[in-house]
Length: 232
Image (cartoon, rainbow, N blue to C red):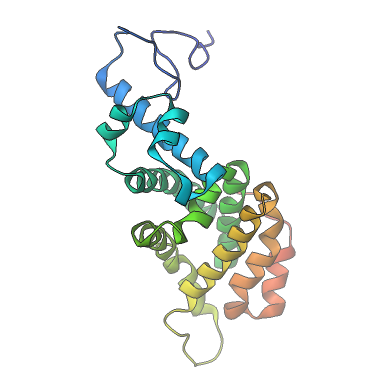
């Protein structure tokens, strides 16, 4: 028997639905999770519409349908709420990237699949794309550093390509970090232009850019332009 759609039953509303007024008998844990998640979603929407510097607690609570008092139960500042939203986005994106990477055989195809996963995720969630790729670097050092740590977590996957490079000269230590930062800049430019849905179009260029230092231009272009392989 099919289950009720989210929010169809007042006894078990959607986790992001506004809660019933007055006594509702919902577990305290559910209420806390619901309110916190609604604040996070509202922050992402406000940031996408106004930018971080014009994001206020008033705008966040209006979007979430809660009071300022509720906001302060979970966060002390807009920055704290932003960090929670950023962590939530990274937690959702990370398994998608890892699964895509592990779905392929061969390092170059794994890198391609991981990049495709990021672009597809951001294309379907433009507000999250702005939250992650555009705003951290204008939102203050704490937020920028949190996002930089997320970028740094991808370095080991790219660094495996050093084993494929012919020649004895060593890469600079910052090679992978620089590549990832430049790729993020290209993504951010597309998102800032209001074209997040077109991010998958960047896949060939980003793959070729990421792989060229390790494989050479010709081989990198071949990987970038060939049809993706099935994971089966």
